[in-house]
Amino acid sequence: MPNNQQNKPSLVLIPIFLNFFIMGFVDIVGIATNYVKKDFLLSDTTASLIPMMVFVWFAICAVPTGLLMDRIGRKHTVSVALIITAIAMGIPFASYSYGGILLAFALLGIGNTVLQVSLNPLAAFVVRKEKLTSTLTMGQFIKAISSFLGPILMGAAAVQLGNWRLTFLFYGLATVLSIIVLHTMHPNEPKADTTVSSSSFRKIFALLRNGFLIRCVVVVLLIVGIDVGLNTSIPQLLMNRLAMPLEDAALGTSLYFATRTVGTFVGAILLVKLSAVKFLRGTIALAVLGFIGILFGSSLWVVLLSIALVGLACANVFSIVFSLAMQHDMKHANEISALMIMGVSGGALVLPLQGLITDLTSFTIGLLVILVSMVIIGSISYKFKY
Image (tube, rainbow, N blue to C red):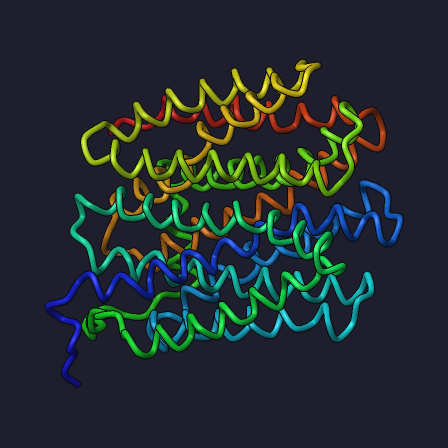
């Protein structure tokens, strides 16, 4: 079938970048958890099950999605992801209960898993290898815009419209639009190489014999855990330490994602010229410094400045490590993408651990889980030799 987009790479990238925006919808789980916790009077441990229901699916569904891509192609796999996401957005209106919310976010997690596994290889095959890091970083910039808008939309829906769940209506409509754009502006997906057999579970997990890829998976696991932990903890931190109401404290999460947005945009420019590994090492050091400010800051401006610094510093970790992994072995792009996205399940591992420690000790002690994760990433970064 002829492809009218073949000589129009900018048009090919439009549905890809729009889907990076849809990808950011998953980040509302942090602020939504605070609203659900308030509505149903949940403990920290029970409330942490909501993000867990999102991110556990990255461990379960990432590898099967890699297999699915080999059978139906990347474009159709992205379509499956968008349909599941649209269904998830309707559930909070059909059944607003703790169980209904768990189901909605479970479907959101499944849809987001399928989307992330399939979208990154699609992007990898429409840009040149040397431009991959900056392209994925630009995608993360667009995702960060979506993440930044989430708490603002939810706060506005709660205050101005009297129902924070109306945010899901906007997200559902945006997802339907993305489906239309994807099929109208069909990405130029490369034809499968019939001489290469389809991926299998054995082939995918065999890649974990490679120590480089193992380190990449661990970094992805930890950086997602850090993101989810901060996303959930920042409003609670501002409420506990500075006596702010939830609607105002939610803007702290928006600040985090706003600075991540700025960080990914700046990173997309700088990473065209700078060493990705050196950039990673420097930004993780800044993240540790900023997080120490969050732990010990006693005034509003110190805490907010520290949140902003951590957001800037953590902005490009995921895209850098993802692109390093993809460039390590482009012939196994689908399999490596599945492994990297499986690492996103870190959000299901780090946050429950943080919630359990918080319930057993204190909120501040629970935050140390995030700091330890940053230190581990910093240590791993010195194992990368690029």
